[in-house]
Image (cartoon, rainbow, N blue to C red; front, side, top):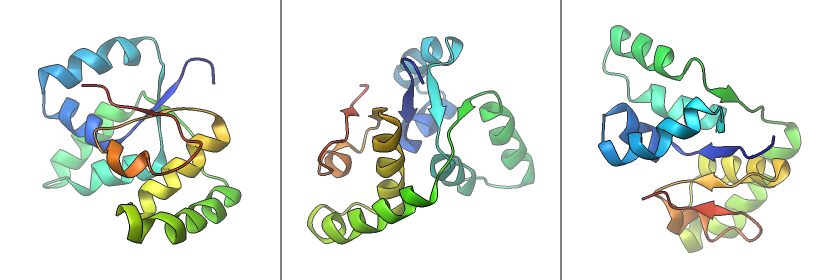
Length: 129
């Protein structure tokens, strides 16, 4: 997937709330189609919708972002990551699934929640700002 990055919900949410630092970071990546949206990230962002209109706006805002798919093997790895890291590092299962998919695809995850993700050996983590 070339120079792609999987962007976590923490960064997308900042961008969608018009935080200048997030938009400044994401805008060039989005225009170059270097951002990959994980289904767990999409679900997390959509979970924050206040009403149907807001849900539609979130869907529209993320509609053109490249997607990745989750494979069954990602779920197996994610469950193992939950066993290894949930108690020790506080990482939740959606983040374990994101980590597993990123490792399979060889892509870094861009997140503000780097404390949780850095616990996963073999995962490349980028803190954008």
